[in-house]
Length: 523
Image (tube, rainbow, N blue to C red; front, side):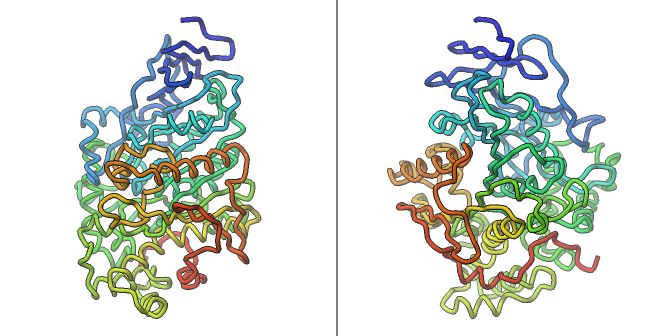
């Protein structure tokens, strides 16, 4: 092995080494001269005196640190069996804040565009080590450096606890982006050409980062895939946190919550989320949606809800790609065991709760949806209104807010239908993830593609990856910017096309709705 250069990087055939600001890391060589570095700490473990605090820069280390295994994930909800993927002892040690770097050219002079991926998971699950997030193919074929990371989720990352900063999970993401700014050149990346990309809760994170003062200047472009409309007011978040604490028999303070082992907290959030309907009179649609945590519009870390902030010009200097899938909520219907089982009463409750005008009062959008979709069945209405409330309209409105604030946005919709499970899920939530990374046979999302992904999936993935990496390199993504007159969007299908935004009926229903921080009812 040759020594490190003054700039901080050297390439060996199998064990490339890079000097970071905290010390030297040794990764692993991959195909065609590329390399991967896994489990690099970007902050100190948030346990002990640092529990529920803002992330603290990692301390320097001596010698060479192996970077060949993913770091320990943060505590996970039981959703999708994610809690079984981590050991309790390892979780309690708190070494959660790590990141991974895939680079096709690990040298300080390469100057490649950088993509930083924020995973989804409803803010309660998610880890960078899942096989669907392997960035090797995206980096190698797209000539970009790919960074993925762990950030605190669930109660550790987002519960509104007295004495703790709000939105600790978002602060973790900012710390990771600061690490990228300070270190990525040594891995072949250009710190002046950084694009943040996220899906679902990761897209909500991207929307928040666009408007957070602490994230200003850390990235120049952003891609938000299926932005959730769930942002909490401090009053709502504090009320939910009190229920978490009540489950544990403590108060919702740093001192008392800090006595509870990290491994115990996800089950508490799961329990409160599962009985959310009991709190509908206080939490409104949040209770019905079974959502226990989300970013909090606290006025400091997150000064305003993304739609308001972007409309005021907060992100005008960041070019944005934003979109959603056509059948966003269909996967959730399956997971709830309601496929083919949704009743008229369930549809009526969903329409009252989630329709425009119903998010605070429990009434509003039902009649409008029935009139707009007269041939729709109960299940179709149930799916449509929740697809719109949770993902489709928040994503569209984010683009419109960006434009209103003087910025540019490119909008897309994924129409291509997943062939797995007999095609029953259509263009469902999460289908975009394997298409972006090109990992069509790996991880949970790849189950949507069937045992043998069709050639059509490979071709569409190649098209999507080219759009994302081209955008990250400073180009347009391959279709015109959105404007409120022509409303041109990219339709990702077997044969991608550019056409007017296809969900025009829903757009009309939600035209006057203002997305913002969900309130505590009666609070």
